[in-house]
Length: 170
Image 1 (tube, helix red, strand yellow):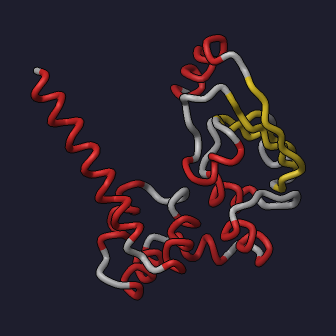
Image 2: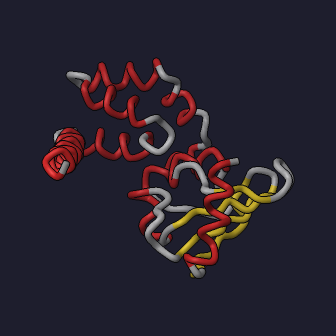
């Protein structure tokens, strides 16, 4: 039993290392582009992208799955914000998904005003998206699909755990 668990852990670490090595092998411009796309594509699509032999094939794959078209549809200012890794007032909801990924929860009437809730520290959302080991969250207020303001706060993980489990199931 322990051998099997150990083998699973070794394989998990090895696959994570291989993934990171594949990202590190990309040219700097491609690394930056991959950071922009990775939050809006599935993990299987990310692995397929990284397995392509060259930049032309990787770019063609992004077009094939529609990710490049979605990014190109953003305003120039939104694309720049995503590539530079910062949230800004007026950013579109689509650009926010590219930047931090899907929110953990959405509250409010869609299209009018919404609160998007992310779990983790503001500075870590760019790299990892939602994390479940932290007692920090970022709430983003959107009006008509545009970022109006955001703030980071702390909460009691134990009190909120039931709510988060409930929200993930529905």
